[in-house]
Structure formats: structure tokens, C-alpha cells
Length: 173
Ligand code: CA
Ligand code: CA
Image 1 (cartoon, rainbow, N blue to C red):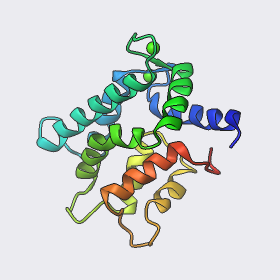
Image 2: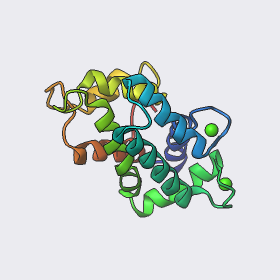
Image 3: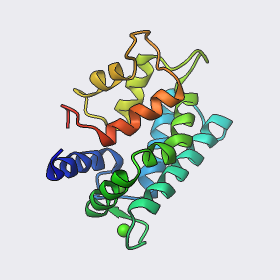
Image 4: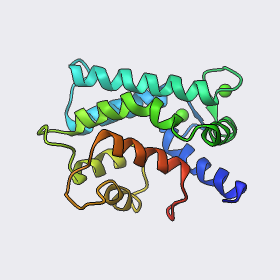
């Protein structure tokens, strides 16, 4: 893949992390995402699932900052994200999946209302709340359910899909 194309695609991912669109990623973006997800699924912040989501979001932020916050000002600029993420992902493609695991696990618990696994419809709600473009949501949700069972498969498959969102080319980018 062309390096410029790869960096452009990573830069597009920046927008989905920068939840409030103020030009940098910080702890606030992750806690806002957690808050929005809890509101969407009617889960309180005080319950176990709510607490796990905030803890997972904080861990995700810390992992992100560890990878990309080069100057240590607790803000990841677009340049830091593109430079840091691209470099680290080339070194270790599984890195994002690993730092995201506690957050994704908590999101699954919040979105899985009946304990039978997250439905594709609920996964679409998650993607929409996280700021994925409306035209991309159905495509991304369908990609999470390759067998067409109507439910999202295991955590490992979810993590793999998440990692590939960052590391493989996609027509939506
Ligand atoms: Ca922001
Ligand atoms: Ca910084």
C-alpha cells in the first residue's frame, strides 16, 4: 500500500476518535463516548457495566496516549495520531486491538441486552453513537457478521475486525 494512502486512511480514523471534533484526542473524547453509549442503551454509569465501560475507556485512552502522545501534553493531535499510529501499527498490528480489549468487552456487555450476544442492529447503534458515518454503518455492521447469523461473533473476532479497521484498506476510507 502507498504510504500516503495509508496515512490518509489513518487520518480518517482520527475523526472517529475525536468525538467532540476540537482537533485533538484526549481523555474527554473517550469519556464522552462512554457516556453516549450508556445513554443510548439506557445503562447507568454507577452499575457494574457502566463502571466497566468507563474503566475500559480510560484504559483505551491511556494506551492511545502511550502510543501516540509524543510530547506528553495529554492530547493526541492529528499529526501525533497519524505519525504515532502508523509507525506503531507497522511495528505491531495487534497493538490497537490489545489496548482496546477492555473497552470493547465493556461495550459488548452494555449492548448485549439479552445476554445472547450483540445483535447486528445493536452493533449498528454502537457504531452510530461512536460517530461512524451513517452510510458506513450498515457496511461495517454487516462485516462484523460474516456468517449472516444476525449476531456479532466472539470477542476475538470483534477484536480482529477492529484491528483490521485500522490496518487494512477499506472502500469507505
Ligand atoms: Ca477531541
Ligand atoms: Ca500531544
